[in-house]
Image 1 (cartoon, rainbow, N blue to C red):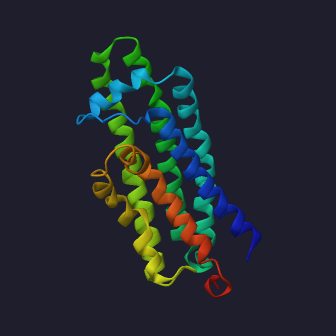
Image 2 (tube, rainbow, N blue to C red; image 1 turned 120 degrees about the horizontal axis):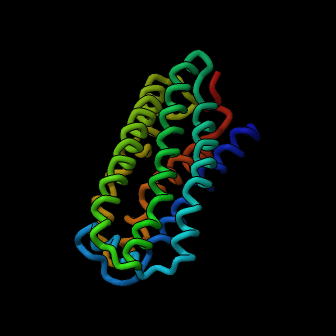
Length: 214
């Protein structure tokens, strides 16, 4: 097994788990979760400032490891299709850069709420909505390109890998959102990052000699 492939794959897993930890630092609680997203964000005002800061800073740092993980996927594309793979890598990388900025902004919700300015939450939500939407759009392009390459046998991945890409697994969050607390936040609250842990883990598991690109 190639050392570079293993190390970049482990970097991807580490990045996704770090971002998950950041999510938990920002808003994990064992208390009942409000139905409205705005009420959940307002409840972040009770989170200690140290937790908010630590949770927010993790975002950009984890994004760097994510990009290394995406490079791991790039390396598993056959050389003759590396041009398409470059677009895949660029889309996923910019997506997680924007996603890291999105994540790093979340302490603002807790700080604003703790200072007694709930009227500002709607404006912050509007801004993060644009960040999240842009990140999601780029992510979709990247994983769509990845899936096409896999199905065309232009990578060292088996065909069934497409099923465990975030294009599919992300939608499982509708199921996890029905879980009771504290599992609701532990799983659904961090699912956007756990789907990446899954795909990087699958990549490392399938990283065998017979799957090496020619």
